[in-house]
Length: 164
Image (cartoon, rainbow, N blue to C red):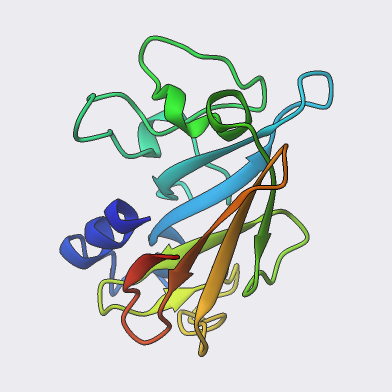
């Protein structure tokens, strides 16, 4: 989460000749693995092609391992991808609850270079301020044995920390 925010702060995505520039903001998005496999994974990406779903080349490289923070719904551990995105396989995370989620999916958090936080990104032109979160957002990661960790994201600046 902190790395996503950091990327947004140093990488201004504004393009004056692109009315959908906001779709390329840095985003951490949670996904479900294929039903046959089960589980949850995430990707960190900048949606350059503006499809709403990351591809391999749009994802962030983990600065420690130089592997992509990416997976597909096959949830496979591949050599050029970080295995740590596979939340169920690596950490036994069974469920994720996001207090600021405005999607039918598990959810996402997007960051703007000005420090603002968004619960999703509008698909419409010039709606770059839509879905800005105005209250603290909580992401609760729940394990198979019901243990949990809660990540807090402050609305006005995107400051992120673990609630103890």
